Image 1 (cartoon, rainbow, N blue to C red):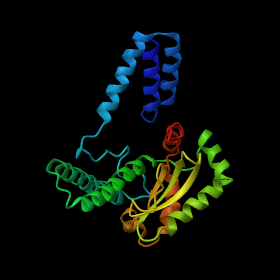
Image 2: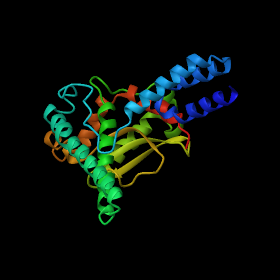
Image 3: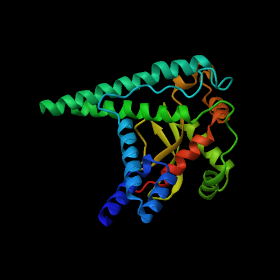
Image 4: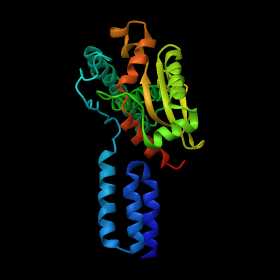
Length: 258
């Protein structure tokens, strides 16, 4: 019995990134009380849910937007959102799936002659797919303002004030060379927030950091509406930031162990 409880506790530690912290804490408390049969059923359900979320090789799909294409107007126009989501994001999904399948084929045939190419394709398209998935959820109609609670406290602790963070993030977005992203990330090693620039999705990152808030400054994200005025696009984008989503990502990120 004690070994079973130990195994479940160890498993709960590993699944923390995928399960809300309250559930993990509650199950650990109930484990101590010894309600093993009921806990076994719930743990089994959690495991099955995680398995259903697992994406098979080459099985990535374009996520639906959590709002209508015109919902972020006037800050981001409907035609930009539609083109950005249906064309650009879909191309990253297609590219990632193809790269994964080709690398699977290489393993099966033990032929790695083109591995460098497909690894690069997977990095480029995979980064594009994952960052865009975060990006859509980082925004919402009637968003903006500032965060609250633990996230705001952490921002003030790490940047001095929300205004200082916002200025830093804005300048990072404006100054990305060529096409790229500005990202607010959580660093598990440093135990603090940081702001990064990433060129071409996969370049300029830091390993182990968790993206919380991301801003796409590739020209396809704003050119139809703002032409080459990236600075205005960045300033207007603050009006649609979904701080609730960023807060949830922050809470989950802080629970990760590296």
